[in-house]
Image (cartoon, rainbow, N blue to C red; front, side, top):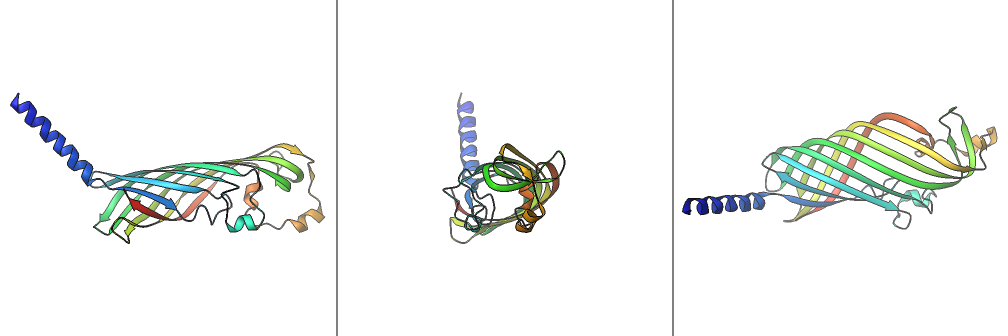
Length: 222
C-alpha cells in the first residue's frame, strides 16, 4: 500500500513538473486585420509538448464593422463582408533559450470568405470570359498547406513578438451566385477595370498555386 501511495505521489509530482515546464503562448496577428483585402482578427494559441515540439491552433474572424485597413478606404470592403479561418500547426523546435525560441513546422489553413458585390465584374468558370453585373453573392474557400520558419522573441518577461515566413501550396475555389443584371464586358468597361491586387478574387472556379506568407504576431505568456 505504501508503495502504491509513493508511486502515485511521484506520478503526480512528475505531472505537475511537466505542466510547469510547458510554454503556453497566446498571440494576435498584426498583419491579417490590416494588410489584407479580406481582413480578419486572428488569435494563435501555442503550447510546447516535451523539449522539441510545439503545436498550435489559430482562429480568425472578420466582418465589415471590424474593418479599418487601407482596403476599406479603397472601397473594397462591402457591407456584407464576413470571413473566418482555422489554422492548425505542428512545429519542431530548432533552438531555444530564456529569451528566444526558433522553430520549423507545417501549417494548414481553411478560409471561408462570403460577400456581396455590387456594380462589379467577374470571369466566369464555364467560358473564361468576363461579365459585368449589378449584384451578386460571393463565396471564396481557400485551403493551404505550407512549411514555415518562425521564432518567439521575448521583449519583456511575459510578452514579445513572433515573426513568421511560410511557403507551400494553396487551392482557391470562388463562386458567384444569385447574379443580377449580368452582361458581357465591353471594350469601354475594360478601360475602367484595370487589373489590380484584387483581380484574382474575381476568377470563378478552382485554382491551385504557390502560397507565400508573412506574419507578425504580438504574444503574451500564459
